[in-house]
Length: 195
Ligand code: GLN
Image (cartoon, rainbow, N blue to C red):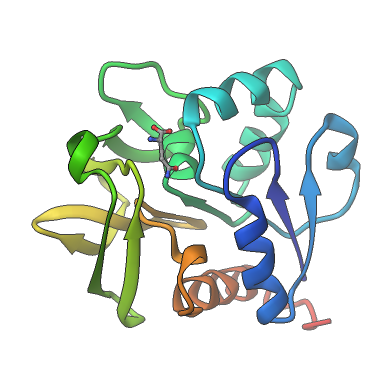
């Protein structure tokens, strides 16, 4: 299994460290040529969605990645990565728009945007959650499964092969969220061996 990590900006190195710990092969996507390499899944990290969105378009990565996600390649978007996948962004135009969620950026205000908590995620259990100028999901439309809420706000969800969190699981020690994603990838390709 090979996971591609979008490495244009933001917290991609932390995802790499997490995959190192889990013994998963990965490489970085920085330019169009990188898409020629084979990969089974994609991680869209946290950072600044406006910057990543602009670079994705300029580097001609947006359309090919969107197509692959739409045809079922597993994707994990954390924080800004979740914003990139959302079909609707409050007050702004969407980027990939592949996931039936409506998100609100910087949704907790400047002061409260960054905080730590622990909460239960469906199918995983209680895990640490670090939020940094975080968005939340205002609305999860049909086909989207809500996986976790904090203070009544949806902050983790899944729709088919797409997984999103408003927090940064790569910044804490717990590997639960990434393991959950790896299981999603394996379920998606049951015919392949685990090499
Ligand atoms: N505030 C950022 C945005 O709107 C997301 C923050 C993050 O990824 N930690 O893109």
